[in-house]
Image 1 (tube, rainbow, N blue to C red):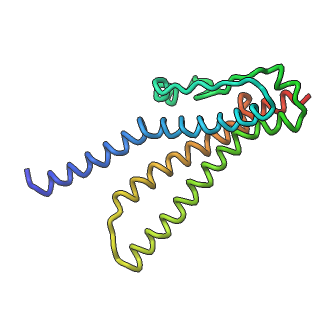
Image 2: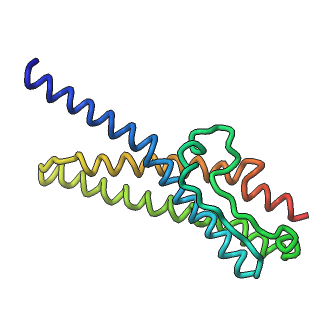
Image 3: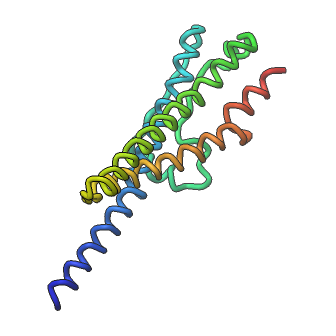
Length: 173
């Protein structure tokens, strides 16, 4: 086999392996990390009002749960519902919104990073004529996939019946 063909096959294999590993192993754990911070937002607000709460972080079930369409949640804060219901409307709102605020922080930071890195890349390619994109494109891929996942999760959390906003409205009455 020709040396060029072997190099091309290796490049295709390397890219395919990178994509496979990021989608099936790295992305679920990035989402689990952002879920952890989402739930920590709820916990901080609950702690502020003296409500007992807990969150179980399970690294072994991250990948199967991430790809299971029937899983209810990737993580959930357990808390004293009666104490939560005894809070005023503003306090309950703060508890429910705390997780979404954490999600929005992640979305903002990833978007800022992608913006500045890609502006720098544009500068290197157009002005400096230096092109070594492998690492930056790899990081961009991972962060962009995480950004898409976080957008979908945040929209779901806002719009679906098991999300924070629905739960807030449910208990406002």
